[in-house]
Length: 287
Image (cartoon, rainbow, N blue to C red; front, side, top):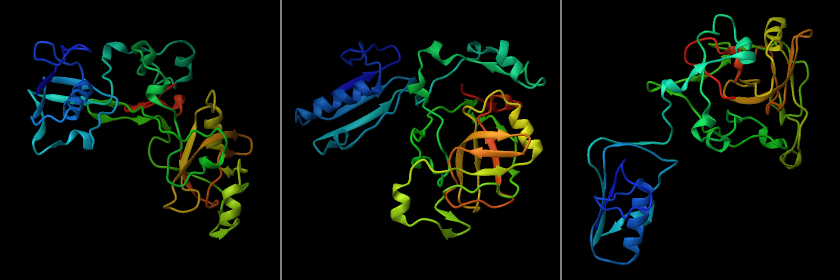
């Protein structure tokens, strides 16, 4: 058995050279059906040159073949499987109106935008911005987004960075203002494992971040979707949290999620997913 996949193929084709499959998934399923019939005959999938978009192509034990019926996959030319989507530069245009005004003056003529929904994509395709870092406490809060954001942006093969401030390195906290209901405080347990297991919607932390940082953050149109990433206590305990509020008068920041291990002074952190901080090449933002 030999079946063919081609960029000129159509869904529902029989998989012959004259009428090839349109996707590798169709070829895989055809081979599975063939092997399921118990025939002692080799199976081969020949894939024509080109780039094939796939939402996650997988093979398992059903696709291994047998000693009397081996399975071979063969590319006829340069074949690329791409789990993403190519965005042609022609799809991008200038940012206009209220969004343009939110950008820093030096960035307004240099930021471009693409409407992903015009390409048939939805939120289900790009996922939700979620907690990053091994030690965040999002699972302790009702409605917290824990599933991954699938969307990343690459330009000419180089991974781009979601808009953040500062652009490099970290900001540093001052003395703790309010320590929330984390599991520990300065290395000492506040709750037993049994107590911690049942706690929900914990009181979060308030950090001193200084007037300069608080003024800058308060200048962003909205904190919806703005996150912080940092190391509130230990240099190995990375965490993140949505930013709940910033008080420019007091120079403080309240997080939505508590730090698992408590807080300390001079803890490194930065803000990310901030539209107004699109201010250097390589940064991007997903609305």
